[in-house]
Structures are given as structure tokens and as C-alpha cells.
Image 1 (tube, rainbow, N blue to C red):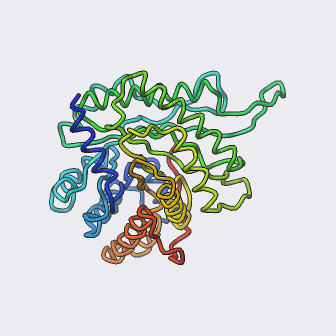
Image 2: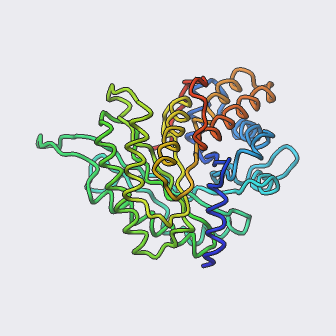
Length: 359
């Protein structure tokens, strides 16, 4: 393990004035988003759409990295150059999503665990040798109150689910580092549900506590690793309004309490929020972090919050590449402003939210 190289990469990814584009939606997820806006679900359409994102001139200044899915990683731009090579040549580090999706956790209704760990040591080599500098692995945690077959009430997430996912994320992170790849660990507390902000805060605290216990146990080099985390939000079906200051206070409180100071950085997922909410809440969190003196870099690792307005325009005007790229450039500029805590509060953006990642 080259600790200095890992730490240098991690610092670059969360460096000032930049963030990460998550372009790692699976083929199934990408097709769902296309279907929702009336675009034919073909590989060529997926390639054309991704190309307009990668080749937007503003991306070179606003993005430190792009997370690819396997299909996207190998796809070619119009000039025959692979997207991952195009990014490297423009100062954007290529990354790769390495989990193979989610399966039910046996014996634990409503809970999931990610798969793919058994084949990871072999799979990671081909991406590293092709130029990938970092990777991402997603687990999901659901907050819900449920009833079993006998009518007994119970709540999730269970400790067993949290610990099982923490183990997988920690083992993935160590395997990445042994291969010279910076791991982004993503234990996503889902926005779906009826939970309160307080319940989300308590859950995220449990998740991060278990995660970093596991990462230390499996000897992950923390300065060469990055956390991708959800924000502390009331559930989408709760009927509770999202207030940026409350989101910021709760999120920063959890991070300060449970994230080790030596960690390489923290990036946020938008998790199904509208583009407007995702940007506004990031801006408030960064300001809260600045006020409380957090030690790690805070930035975005957004998919839908950057892409949804672009996708909506492109779906109706597929020949207007320049117009779609102008919208993407606008989203990137606002995201960069938010990651610096300088977003103009009156800035307006789309509230369209496309289909989420597969569960």
C-alpha cells in the first residue's frame, strides 16, 4: 500500500472549488430515467447523453473526478477516445463503482446488503490498469417501523444490518487500497420513508459509528479514504418540510461526533432530493462546517442534482447539445458555489427529480 499516493488522490478529489460527478447509474437505472422523459432506452443514447456531460467545457474546472459504471467506463467519445481517458487528459480523475448491487439480507425483512465482495480482488485490477484512481461502493440503510407475520412491531435498521454493511464496506476499502485505489465508502441512509429528522440523525450516528470501527479493525488507511454520506433529512413521505438550517445542524453534529479527523474527506450524495434542495442543503452544511471548524474537505458527489435539469432539457431537444451543456455548466457552477458555502440563496433551479438507483 502506497499511503502517500492514496492520501494525495483523496485530497485532490475533495480539493477546493471542485466536486465529483456520479455518472455510475446502472443500465437499469439509466433506462428508468430515460423512460421517464421519453428517450429511447438504447446504449447509443446512453453514450450520447454521457458524452455531452463529459465534454462540457466547464467540467474541466468544476470536477475533480467522475464515478463511472462499467458500461460508462469503457464507452467512447465521438473521437474514439474512452471516457476515462478523456477525463484523465482534462484533469478529472476517473473512478469506478465496484459493488454489484443489493440483495435482501436473509432473515431481516426490509433490509439489504451489497454484493460483489468475493470477486473484487480480481475485478479491481482491470480498472486500475486502465487508469481508475478511485472507486465507490454503495450500501443502503432503510429507516422504517414494520410489523411481522405475527403482528409484532419492530423497527429497522437493525444492528445486524448496520454491522453487516459496515463489514462489507471496510473489507472493500482495504482491498481497494491494497490495489492502489482510493475507496469511497457510501453507507446511504435512504431518504425514502416517514421518519423524522431526529430519527435520521440517530440512524446516521449508528451507521457511521459502526463503519469506522470496522474500517479501523480491517486496517484501512483513513487519510486515503473518503466517506460518501447522505444528509440528515426527514423522510420523503413524512410530510415534514426540509429546512436547510436544521439539515445542516444535524448533519454537522453527526459528522463531528463520528467521523475521524484523519479521514481523507467527506462528499455528499443528493439521494433523491430536488436539485434545488440538494444545492441549498449542501451550502448550509458547508457553512455549518466552516463555523464549527471541521478538518476534512466537504464537497458534492451528485448524480441527479446535477443531471436532472440537463436530462429534462435534452430529452425534448436532443439536437441541442450546446443548450444541454449550458444547463450542466450552470448546475456545476451552483454546486461549486455551494461546496464553498457561497451559493446565492435566491438562485433558482429545476425541481424535477428523476428515478433513483436500484434497490
